[in-house]
Length: 351
Image 1 (spheres, rainbow, N blue to C red):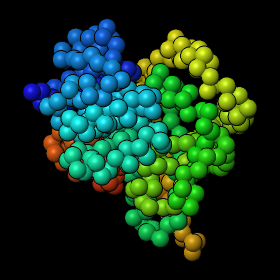
Image 2: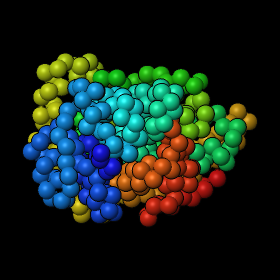
Image 3: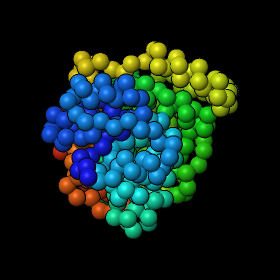
Image 4: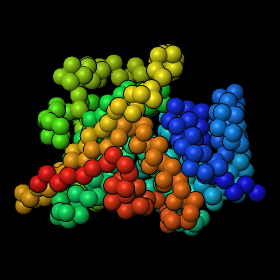
């Protein structure tokens, strides 16, 4: 029986980074994915064992997972991979982790809380840049103002997307934006709102985006009204609003296939030097009905660098049995201060 954790999607951009760091730290993972040539190439490079399997048969996937203490799913879009892998993990009694930032995936994971508790399995989505830093920031803010009724979160980051991230954006574009209003996740137009965000490095214009915290921060804080923002230029905001008109076309399979092919040809993800030079800034604010406000900023490493660090750390803790059965957000599973333990992360209370 195998006793090593499985990293699925280890052949993708982010999966390779995570697999390399896991091996460097001595985790001895089994690398897996559905593309035999690519998975075997990564496994040879890292001198690690590998498995090749698709996710179209849950029972077959569960057999591949037998004996594994945990699975870290790095294969996006997670709207296609999370559900079968979570179900297989429940059957195989392996803890499930992923690096999604997709609202619907996080909500689907939360819906599995009861069966996961019964199976003795932890369901831990979003253990990367989406949403560890912002989720911990939200929990820290809520602890300072327990009466908070509104949460605003924003980020700005350097470097471009990976192919997987670009494909995930493609999947979510037709759905527009999301916000949590009076406790419910509601659809709103793309770039629904804009505001000036006082990041630590200076004010930046930002637009609302359907960030994973629309789901996760509610589970972490219980705050009923949540908006998430990303720094964007006026031109980007105009483009997002123009895309509202053509978003329905992205539902057609041929259109989506052509764009996916373009992504695969044109996007390779940030280089190592870009990751080293890059960084990310977060801002958060909570307020209550009496007008009280608490604000904080958080500085962090570049997104893929941070994802690598947080995902491997979460996987280590799951393997060590440090997580409880059932669904949990990063701050629920590992504590609201979890993000503060990583190099290059700095929190500052602004008011």
